[in-house]
Image 1 (tube, rainbow, N blue to C red):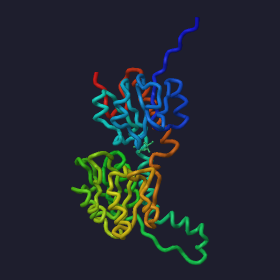
Image 2: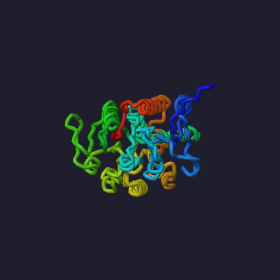
Image 3: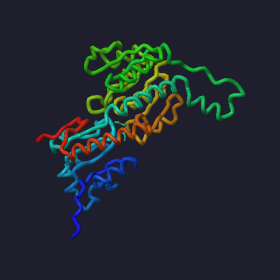
Image 4: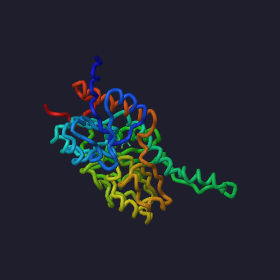
Length: 319
Ligand code: 8YV
């Protein structure tokens, strides 16, 4: 008589993950892809106990509530602004994220966008490729050394950005919701005050209801005609309409953006602007970091199903 194989926990894959994560996950779990048309496309949702989602996709209340056996939402990312935490708490569902392992790469992206923007790297590339160089030099550009860099949100990623900019001989100021007495950088009382001081404003604050439009029209224009804005946080944290207006009118000099309000669809006006560098939300998108993020998702899943404490929970279950 052959033994009945033990059934593997069912895990709903709301967002894709690389094969290097899927292969080991399939050994431990039955992975179920969320159908394009939603949960209605599944024969049953009654025994799905965990779901994996990205920072950008998250998990809304309707999804959480439609999964009666759900115990864990494992976010493949550090941002959980798109996860309905109230619904998760109500349904006694734990939520984990992947902090720390992506901090360095996201901070690097902030520096890359700033340098690309100030030194017009993308324009320079196009200039060389076009064959225009023999006819005369490319116009002079702005620079970063000696500039005042204002960081909106001095969390883990904001701190890492500040440390990197310090290596570029810049002056660093910041705004943070709660005071950071241990920080040696100059604190400002509001994002607008920080922006009025800064030459370059880097937005690194967490997304979510509290920070929607935090960098508003007044904060953007306070940067001035030579000012640069860089956003690696969430598209929601900057008033996008006000940013486009400021870029179109020349109220600020330029923007380097890794995040957009309605990504992956972007406002078509961005593509017509010559003073922006646009990146398709690539902050954490390196092989090394995505491997580390995937490993952390799997560690959290394994801990949950072994009944152990979750290594990186932002919300735990009550017993
Ligand atoms: C990822 C992110 O793009 O960590 C986050 O919150 O936005 C990014 O690292 C995403 O979560 C990976 O799918």
